[in-house]
Length: 487
Image (cartoon, rainbow, N blue to C red; front, side):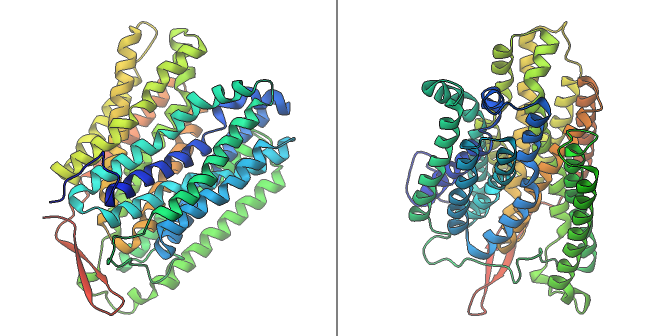
């Protein structure tokens, strides 16, 4: 068994380090808005409603983007897709930095949501370079260290803005993240290869829809597509007349009709790609169970979805519960994000050494207990105890994320990008659902609601099947290759 030399920068370890750096930069760019909002609001003279609109638009495109980028990764390879994403998304980043009106800023933020899809590219790349014995650890480091880009944005960008001073300092800070994205696009393209030398890169037959291998899986695939469009519908509702008032009733109706049409078109594409399964059964050795993907969808909905939602509200929660200053509350709340550095790698490492299914079960149970405990935090609690409970909860959240993506590449190698895209999109779907629920509930009820959905994910985790044996891929010459996914 190859050693895992974390401090090395050669071979597969070079691929790992460059991958998490690329992911780090995507999150730095994606989350460069929130830390600078007070400056941006003053500079562009935005209303409270317009600020809310920018925050919603920043995540609106990420759900379809993760699906699209996952498919492109499987078809074109991680090297080209990651480099292109970093380069192309620098354009709306620069546009936002130069924006002089809300309309220009809104369009730029909407387009910048695409960079939030970068995560799924690295999962496919890591799966090409690491065996199943180290895959969870590598994917956990990639996810945890890269995810830290959001926390880095919160700590560094206001300082950069202050260096340049005045109301326009935020433009330099935003532009700086865009410049980093351009520079690293070139570094990544020149330094990475999709596979180790001599290995084949397996691609799907079609990139327009995920391949499935049975009629029952086709039905499940169609059902799994629906929540993504429901989430996009909820985002449209939030931007409509009754909420933020960015869209008129007629524009909202057009968007709803467009989303319905896209969903029906997606069903048709799924049928086109998979109609052969209705004619004859797929040979046994080429089959995989889409049920495995559906289970991981639910688990990532509960883990990453809740993380995005909770990170958004934690500072205000601590301010209102313990009457802290905004600065101190922000520092306390940042403990939740800081846990990513160790929690995601821990979830992946535990999956590698104990087993995928038992770790998913244990972490899902801890997730439910963690949010249940957070529901009982109140002003009478000692602040240190509240912080400890928050950090313990975040460990189970982020370790659960690591455990999910320790498993994804073991389902079907050539579809890893598409599967990662769907599961990653479910994380954003979860965030939309949880944040929508928050508008209707108080903090205690909100944490209870998250705990209840975590109990559902805990129950569903028992249905997951531990990867066994190997998966089969077809080489260009027609020969078959066995890829081990378990001892």
